[in-house]
Image (cartoon, rainbow, N blue to C red):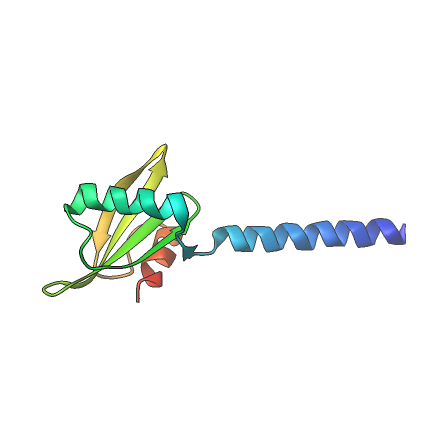
Length: 106
């Protein structure tokens, strides 16, 4: 009985930790970064001024610094390919995950 409780507790803790990690924002790497930058270039026409690329689940953001608009966040959603969702200078649009991604651009 005691061993079963320990195992169940370990599984529960592991599941909670995995869920927290999955909901987090991380820098995009490898093929994901390349695909997001490609989607950004298709939207913007250039890769000039990119300051960061971040992902969380099926959402991603490309942070661009421009002389006239300052820091602009381009949010994308992945449904097969990365597709442009919206761009903003603030951190208040979209769902909770997209707002966390926007906040990663600093």
